Length: 68
Image (cartoon, rainbow, N blue to C red; front, side, top):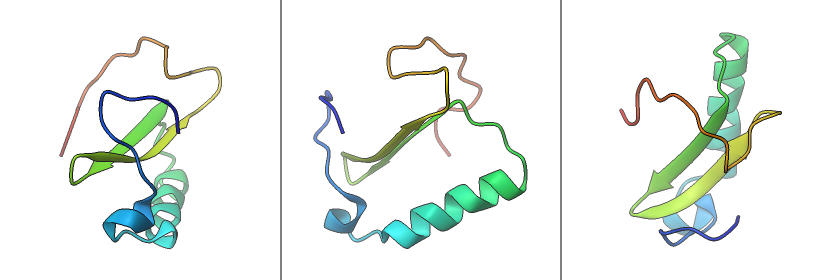
């Protein structure tokens, strides 16, 4: 993980298993939900960040829903 305005850490450090994140990503893929990027935060820390090609952290993107 790179430099953030927020502190970053691994999911395990805040009590979230890597397996849970992989399962969540598998559900998105199975339902064919197109995600250009994903950033997860928990307890004020960035715990996961991923981008689908050709998108990057610097890419501007339209946001339909910022949080749920």
